[in-house]
Image (cartoon, rainbow, N blue to C red; front, side, top):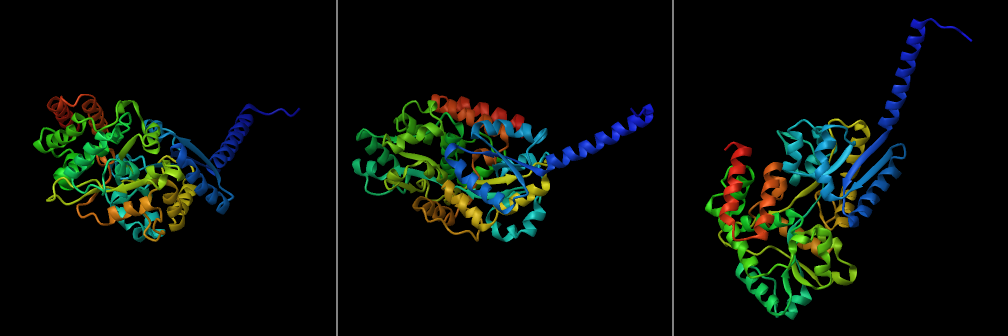
Length: 416
């Protein structure tokens, strides 16, 4: 046995530890960890794209973790601040900017220039930008509107899609008289109610006012906000929504349309992937009707994105994955599988009938495109606003008290 002096032994231990730690770090850096928010019917589309990436990059050890949407939203901030994966899926607009502002995201501006994204993703560049820098890699985006059952419209004597709010209310009345629930809504997921607020505000007050409200620059006690809620209340007073809507989330609501228990649902084009092939022929998709013809028509068109956390360990492979996912072919494949619209200008246009309507809806809008209530607004205010919408849905008689509370919250959050 060779005897070693304590100092020499300590030096050897330190060297061994350094070598081991270097090997360990290399092993860790070699694995590319990706967290993705996905409902069950979206996973196969994600996985197809990841499988193609692995085939093209066999040396990358890709590990993908799929997480349900609501759980994902809760955990996102914690990941980014502590020990994040290398790539995460998320939302554009304020949702992205919230983390960019806090220094938690990798600057992707060089990727935009190097990969030609400045040209290919020009239409969504603004939504992917914070403080002059791009932090997001865009994927598909959704048009919002009404899914509706053509056969139930016919049964109720409705011969065409309603273009105005008065026509819409008249059609709801006809459906109810025929024993058909006019509207399904998954109110347990508060963001589905936010779609209603967005569209009523956009149609009544226009996008300029809507964006002021989203930025905290308009009071909730403004008569224009109250008009949104009183218009909305008409649908509840006439029982045009399904019963017990607050007990249904998005995953449990699709049977209402699939089985013909409800005639309409306000939702993004991604929801089309929920319909079985034998039902799709009976499903139509239409623009939210006009309420005030003097207000330019605006739409919600939220963009889904990929981000690289600032604390990611394997940034080299993360940038490689983003470059692959942003190619026109993969962008189109993802959009097609999700029932969305490709955001890459070189991608093939959708051939699905619902996606075609959504594409035309966004392409012809004259009043602007919003990102969606909880993506245009700072998170704390959005959470309070959507909680208030559920309270309003539960008891529509308390509009003034509800808006007064939201105004106190706005002043506290924005100091305005």
